Amino acid sequence: MKKSVQKVLGLVLVAFMASAVLFAGGSAEKATSAKPGLLVSVWAGPHADLQKKVSSEFQEANITIDDVDYGNLKQKQLTSFQAVSGSGNYDVVWVNSQWMKEYTDAGYLLPLDSQIKAAGVDTNMYAKGLFDGCVFNGQTYGLPTFAQTLIIAYDSEVFAQEGIAVPKNADELIAVAKYFKDKGTGIALPAKQGSAAVTLFSQLLFSDGGYYFDANGKLDIASATAIQAATIYDQLVQNSVEGCLAWHHDEVAEAVRMKDAPIGIIMSGLANQNADPERSLIVDTVKYSVLPGKSGNAAATNSFWVWAVAKNSANPQKAAEYAMWMTSKETEKKQTLADQQISAINDLGKDGEILAKAPFLPVVMQQLAAGKIDPPLANFGKLKAALVVSLSEIASTDAKPADVMNTLQANLKDIDFSK
Image (cartoon, rainbow, N blue to C red; front, top):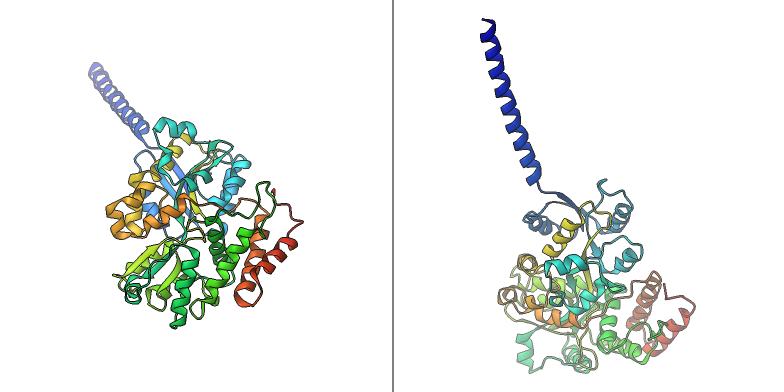
């Protein structure tokens, strides 16, 4: 009897140990195959929901998106950069291009050159004007995406009826605006006091080879090219649709798509509304063109976002893989088809499937490729704020653009724009 009990106990023990081995083996296998988690910081803007949906398809890691309102986004990223790695800090950050220099100077971001090379990513596929904004001191700190720029949208039916050609330079654009102004409408443009007017001025400045500073980094806002850009801006405002002095981007886009203006200078991010029959009267007749300078060249004031990897990421390799995946041609195409957001990838501007949904894309890509970015300097904010006031004076008074720009130059002469 005693031996029988011992035998039974022995069999039970063997069975228990076998089960334990199987269980442990299963747990080890599960632990080995479990995907790492990445915490990703993005702006809770119009594309955040799509980014969450697309990110769920990334196979190499489980992605958690923390979408934050724009007013708090930068501060939350800065706090995360200074946290201990693995303490719940961000692995990947979606960075406004204007913040990149500050982040790289502080050492918050990881250079991605080795990962990009190992993955065989050809960075020439990105618009040069955007990719250059990700490179600092010869190192690549992120990959560009989600760009916007001002472009011309016009009602081709009206142009055909009036026998008007699409303007190829600023002088022709002013002439077209005057033609329609004399007929009771004019050109729609964002002339409200604010950043939109500065963007318009900047694109006219950049398109003719100008910039805010000279080759030595000194303020040059009263240069011949800057005065020329301010003069073009003034002449466009003089021949604008009634009410433009109170219009920002949304009002301009609405005026064009509701036929209140036969031509307008719109933000590309609003162009998709022109194809919506519930919001647009020009679904079948809208066409797009570059916003040219006096020379006929067209360059954007490049505003875009960057997928970057936090230096204190607990898993920098997977974080870099995610950044490259999000800016890959396949993933960017999926996002563009979903909501017409503009990637930095040149070839997508020639993709037939995309063009059917976003016919404005070739125009945008042409400008982005030649574009420049606003300088990522702390004191640039002072110049921009003063420029807002100066452009408002030009638009709303009889002040001569040259006088206004010379006064602006004199008022800011003591500011150090090297930082």
